[in-house]
Length: 302
Image (cartoon, rainbow, N blue to C red; front, side, top):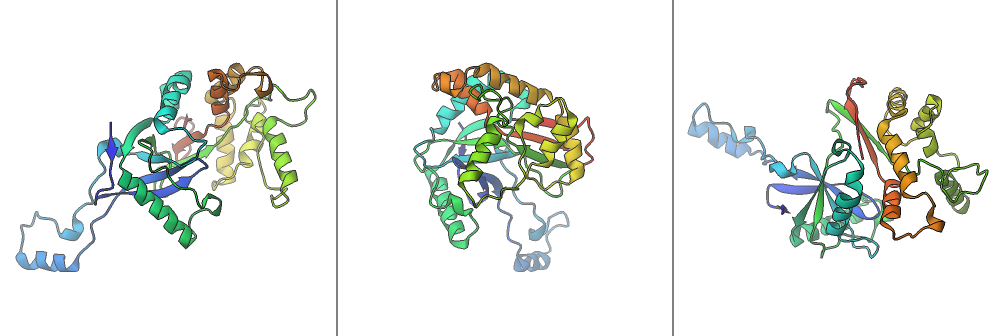
């Protein structure tokens, strides 16, 4: 199994975090340019084919880590060891989808020193105010023996690609919803939380998951335009066209319904199928395309 250590040439750069994990980019440390070294280079008269010290390329990442992000588990009683969650994904979730629609996951061994270093940097971020305040006080599990490498779906500003991600949530009405319900499960939960927390902006845009799988293109575009993102409305229109009747979204909806036909109030919540259904109701969908947004180029992953 791979081991990732923070040697002098490799470092982890904080990217984002959720309730249970922190995600990092893997970076190589660029060599520090040295004016003195360049002067010494000139005076010594090396061969014309010898590069100047400031022109030497920084080291590249080892191939297993190229194009990957690092996901590390937080120290929470509600989280399970990484190896266990990885086996669950491989045994129950991965067989439900074509391989090309899944973001690759590879488990590895982080060294104890690398975990301690990451926690020290999280504390530094709190002191500088650069870590989200709602995440303060919770750090990585330093006794965790594994981490997970996942395909990097982000795009740099100068990349030929652009990407978009969102959680589709419950793509079908809850089996336990009352007859004649005016809201889907996601919208009803959102409305309840807003009623209880006056600090939440009552008019902040949110999409209804049922609109995403509607046969009505206008409803799909309405959902996409309500998602928080940095892209323009032109991208909204193109994204809605691509997501309308998208096979992966349709498959996701069918699986949610098929794996949990009875609902949380009438099923064994520890049953593997129900757990899989709930996982698929909280997964993230990634959309990546060439900057010119040509319809033949986009791909979707979960």
